[in-house]
Length: 251
Image 1 (spheres, rainbow, N blue to C red):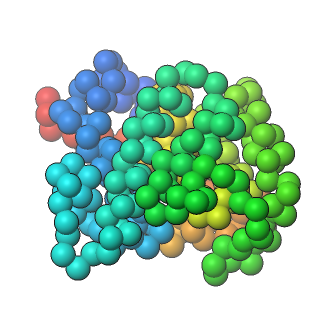
Image 2 (cartoon, rainbow, N blue to C red):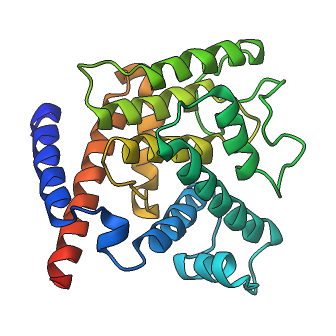
């Protein structure tokens, strides 16, 4: 199945999901908002090497638990991401214009407890992605590149599906790599905001898909983001199918 056919299938599934939950997923599925906040925190941190499980993340974030054998940094990353998710939901999802300052504030939440001196500030040094051959832009270009990206966010191309638009904005963010640390987590939060604003559910990227996800980002320069777009569409379809099954079970 080609990408356009897959998009047609996903749009049909999305219409079915919206019909099943006309008042939204948060209203239609018990504690969905709490579950999603936890899963997005667990999976996004896991991509970056955090070893807390979903259950452990829930205990740390919601019960202030201390997990034996896990580092202080892992605990702080979980709490910070959960707060960053709350900021994203309460600002970016409200229909407000996404601004450069808003992205800086989102990043400040992501690194609040683990890298405070860099939290909310563009990088001022060269960086590289470990294990990747991608050449990242000079740090002096970062403010202009982010400003251009924000313009694309707020004026999306009318002929581009919102799901693909969100995936490509995420990809642009990673390619700019505007921060010393926290780029991936911030990019995934931004993608989640764009998806939810467009009526799509946010998509956790589980550890089983980590290698494919990172590989699609690394290949973006050679395939113009095609693998990244295909992965985003597949994961969205699987997420909607799971939610429809959940809705059927609860009927």
